[in-house]
Image (cartoon, rainbow, N blue to C red; front, top):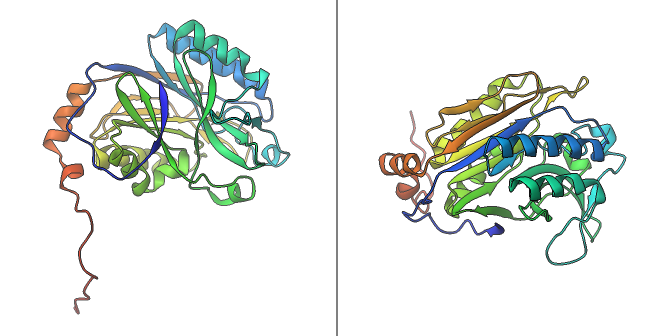
Length: 294
């Protein structure tokens, strides 16, 4: 399993993965500031995913520190090693390393990350099968008050796992069609979106991610938090969508849950044969637009 930079420059070829992949999306309520306790809760979800024979688990945005801006403003973060691998040595994540080695489940989990150069980002950590933890992706589109807490990421990323390619996004990234399209342009078969949607945003939560699936004829795995104190109360609804945006698995708006589904390469191939938006997309939209008087 590797994390690759997202070139976003070429359209995907006709190849699809050769074997199905069982994946999981988790929703749970983290405790603000309790990185060690939240890592323990994440490790429990990893083991549940392993029992369900999933090989990939996606957990919510900022799950390790919890999405709680007052706590995040105090500087809670995991630190990245000063080496090219982007490794994370934080001992609080040892329970996740152990769970990965025991189960073989690859986990994508949200964290606040402090880089060697002092930048702090809203990121997705990737916990590999061997227990190594690396920074997979730094969120590029920051929502509202997040701009005071984090620095924007400057590049996309693609997770490569067992012949499958997954574009990495975080919450607000998925509101931009261009972000999912850049992943598809880099050959993604799926799009992973750890998120933090608040109560009252159910319409948008349930619209953006199936739209990204159909826009790009790719699977989407959406994870979201639940619970929390006002005004940061989260609405669950974790889901796995097929390449036409249809629900394969869906969580309730409240309560912890683990959603599991099989990604079928035959479904991916059939969808892309019938709906060829990726192949038919023009490289540009022509000369400057003309204005047509009514």
